[in-house]
Every structure is written in C-alpha cells, then in structure tokens.
Image 1 (cartoon, rainbow, N blue to C red):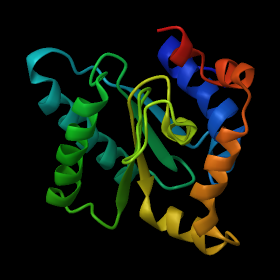
Image 2: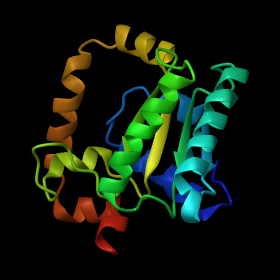
Image 3: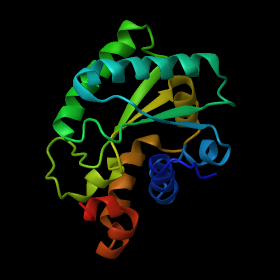
Image 4: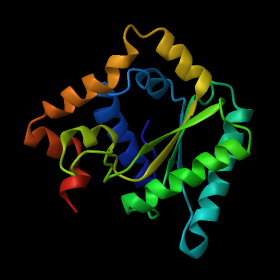
Length: 187
C-alpha cells in the first residue's frame, strides 16, 4: 500500500527495503504487512516548531490510546522540514522524553529515533553502524512497550540484534548503500 504523499511513500520504501529488507528490526515485518503502521507527516514549521511538534507527538500518543494494537501497532511521526540538523533533533528528543513522562506514558510508549544524519555516540559520521538509524527524514517512532516486550520475549537472542545489524550494514557494498540510502548520496 503506497500512500499518495511522496514523503510517506519514501519512508514506506525505506521501511520495506532497509528496516525489513535488511531485517534491522525483526518485529517490523508483521505490522508493515498487516497495515498496522501509522505514517504521519508533521506540519510543524516556523518559530513555534518545538511546541507544535510536542502537540503532534501528544496527539499520536492519544491516537494509540484509542486504537487497539491490531488497528495501529506503531506510529512514525515524520518531520520532513524540521530538525534537519542532527544536533537539533537530538536535543528535541529530550523534550519528547519529557513529554512522554509528563503525560504519564512512560512504560506505555517508547520513542525510537531515526534521522538522515544519525550518529551514535563514539562513532564517526561515516561509520557504517550509523546506517542502522538513518532514514530519509527525521522520524519519531512511537512503539508500544507491551508489544516490544512480547516481541523480545519471543526472540531467541534479542541482545544480538544491534551487533547483527552493525555487521549487516558493514557488509553492504558501496553500490548497495547507494541503492538503499539514495537520500544520503543526493544531498
């Protein structure tokens, strides 16, 4: 199912080709196939960007509250025009975590982060392991804690996922990287 919004279509393609295609998240295939992933494009802009983003994030928590897991398993809040600088995005994650706690959602939801310039601590920007969290746009991925816990319980060795992902992206050829991450090479 491809959305008519080009931003959503690009994120869906990344999800299919990278996250599911490379099996970076062994729990993503099922909700993607079942249409249980909610894709939302942020409309935040201008001087009040942070406030609007926090309001949109709160709205998405509330949408997940109203929906069953079989209706909406998870939400991707996509930020096509905001927080393009990774340091600004990273700083905003503190605000997002504050909102999660302040609204009483700690233990209910978790926010995973993706960004075109994602960089793990103690890595260099060009290190392949950063590709595991590089997406076409900054994204706030809202996960249901209960679903995550169930998935981890049923996964044979969840501690190996990050290491396996690093090995997987390190094994990609330059040609494969350009095909899977075209937005990193067209800037």
